[in-house]
Image (cartoon, rainbow over all chains, first blue to last red):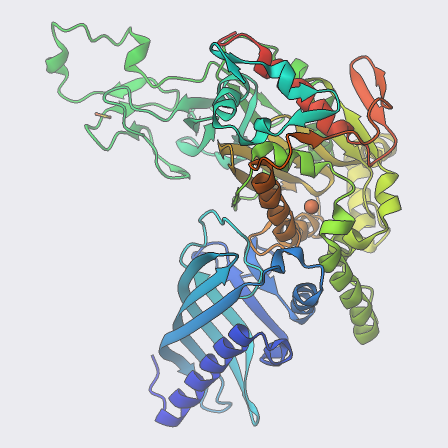
Length: 164
Length: 440
Ligand code: FES
Ligand SMILES: [Fe+2]
């Protein structure tokens, strides 16, 4: 763990909270803007996995695949989105792992807890995030977000239609 | 509908419609487990899941927990997952390596990979008792029958019945097609297995797999979204979009094109939907792969292999195979209204990496827990289940193109992709299994 200034800690936390809000409020244009043009959202199929490329993953999406997912859920014939699901994210335990002295790029770990409601049923997801963030004058952007969900290997009783 | 200790199966299954009880009745479900899943051949796993001595993988055959294990002599054994001492499960992990023996966590009895006792503690306690190692009950119980075809391990809990090859009949093409597409003639499993629980009857899943009407309706949202991104990508990068986008944009193709596919019904309920979207493009990766294939097989045999035109094949009641993309879904019924599918994909041994990536992309886009395709299928399945549990009607209609199939040597064919031939064919087999004498 690296010693970071209170200001950096605060900026990083605000970024993570903002991402959670974007997901819960379904602000998809803002979602895409969170990532660098080459950025990836990655949920491995097991905690041992060390890379997403060329592996079987639960999620491994770049901008283009994210756009397909957004296009799909916004389409009036996305049948399993009637009724739509609603989510509430809590992000916590924010630990900055490294801060690059020159660029201000950040690697940060955190924990999440998500409640999802759909069709009279609630599901809960928990796990950890590891964000690889690029620093820029207009804020951080995600180069790689790794999401380890605690039940990665478990059976799923209904698919994950959105990023967690 | 229950009469004596049986059911009037003929009252449930007519040639062109079936009674909703087939999907909703728990007693019928229990009979399916006994008469179908505990008798017919059931896919257990692929031998590459257990490459080394001591490797094991667990699953279920019907309601029976089983272990597939690799013996040091390389043989594969399928054993009931039960300790002969006081009955504890021996393995409760999905897979692993157990070394020289399965050791029971309760009193440390040990068993070799063929299920034979290796060691029992406190031997002297068995002096002057009826306990004997000559008694099969002292060892782990093997399944009644087991056969391995090109690495695919099947087991049957019934001592009698057709052997695997006879039972598969022409449906063996699904396994052959998958293996033949490998330059080395073999496939190797990728260890990640996605498991999905469907809140619906197992037959709804199998019927959907060869339902050529549903894709352009159920999956329209994803098909159109993928089509749009394909265009954007081409405009933004100046390059054609990767083949993987086509796997999902193809779902937006006109209904008529799906109708042009052929459907075939084989004995024992096995079925095939023929035709495939853009299977043999002429991009550099495909051309390189075809070159490797010709080196192994020669030009003629290569053409034969690549000409096989299977979109989807069902090995009834346990498997859905997409051989050209090396995907396989094993069906494990849990209750009348609950089904587990184990989803696997494979590498073609000897094929270049980009060819594997196609299987991987399909596995991700269609079969992963974040799938944008099966999301809507699963929802339809659940809705069907709820409707079939209601009293709003008694029958499920399979009338489309009924009576118009060509039948030759027990094989029914229709060149109308929309024909509900596959559903009728599956229920013909279902009726035979279910009407058979108990225990017969
Ligand atoms: S139950 Fe297995 S050793 Fe006793
Ligand atoms: Fe579908």
